Image 1: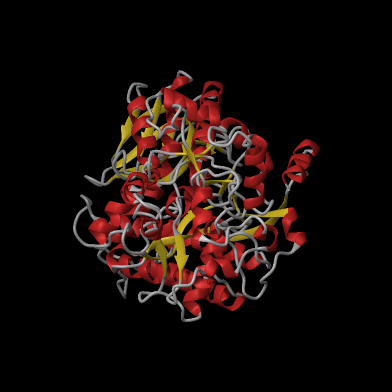
Image 2: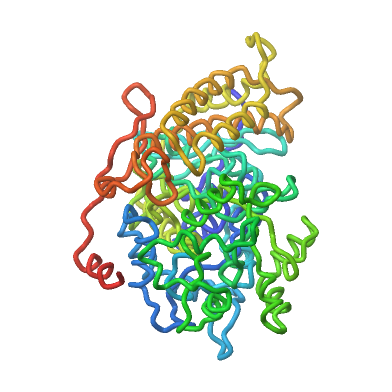
Length: 606
């Protein structure tokens, strides 16, 4: 058996973004010993890329806002296939979570009278996003890390988990390796929380960094947990298009929330051409009124650029497809018009969007106060993930919890901007508390030596010097998978394309058995890539099978062969699990009937 080092914790948190840090802090507050494992360096989680803000109905800018409006907005944005219990908890508890973060040292932007400032965002009825310029996620991570280091949490940076370990049906630990030396590590735990983030690297164009390969979803699936809503992948409307080295890097929705407009190659504001009927009366038809709305004018109407992300992304793709796109295959996002029409606004733009200003200045040599940005849709967020209980965030496998982007339920078919950061605060706190309670009620489980031997042997197979007649490169297989998912299971989907994608995933999975790497186990990026391929195959197959099963268009899932919603499909979620033979199967999971008081809230908000 391969050598490994052993650690023991009451609660093990895998993933150190906002969700993982908040869960670890709460688990430590419960009195248990907590371990925190992260694939990269602490502080480099994707949460730092969340620029727009934290959605919480505090009513600081518009006192008409409250949890009921936030709940209704979230359900409407998710096309009513959300877990309504999670949506209720989220809307009610988000404001207190923001105040708690402020008490721990977060420095939010303020109103003139000293309250926390809130900005408009797509899909939210009132100004709701608490922010720090366009660096909100960075401030959140800084605050959580500064608070977390005093909780006695053991942190394991640059460690990757290969498998979860079970005893009598419940999760009792995890087995993985460190990137620096390539040594194996065993983490015994009474409870495990997955907070590994999203799946963006399964697609070619993404705002996600290299770590986001669906590891948590795949670990849970292999352990017997169910995944849910995997067909709902959010393509953010605005990622950088040029130069190619930065293609896909996020351009925050705050640019549109602070007055930016979308233009095609003809200079026309094309979003005015495709406004849903139920939004038409509320939509501004000129830049100045939209600007007044984004500055808090309660009498102004909402700009069409603040419609939901799925709708804006499809409108952009239509312009590109019809030959009205920008020179490099996107459209133009213009906030410079404000400087031309509104005096002394240049510094306002730089103050509100400092990261965007410097990002385009340094990476594309564009001054956003003087000229438009070139943007296009980018794979951004996964609404689907591990199926969890609304109250506790426990998965369908005892002792295994999931939170943040690798969990699922809150967002339904489409996430509203800003709901991700309040999601990780609300449910990170809940997951940590319930995992700590679970740990107090259980003892350490038995570790199966055979499972460890199998995991270590499988992990070392890419170093084998024989047995493969034709050697494959992990990078080549990863690239082919990304291109195939982008082309065949992307923003616009068709049955035939997705059937071909399933066949392609099977072929690539077969080729992956012949992947070989050279060198040793110390900082071997080829080996790391080879080990993540299985996760990418699992999430890619789950996305494709779910998208095939949902024969309608809803939220972020758009099928050209079924372009409209089917009311009967609003009654279930699609759950992905293993069949009796170990293959992947998709089933319809009925959505529980919503409580009458919450149904009344939605009717009132309509």
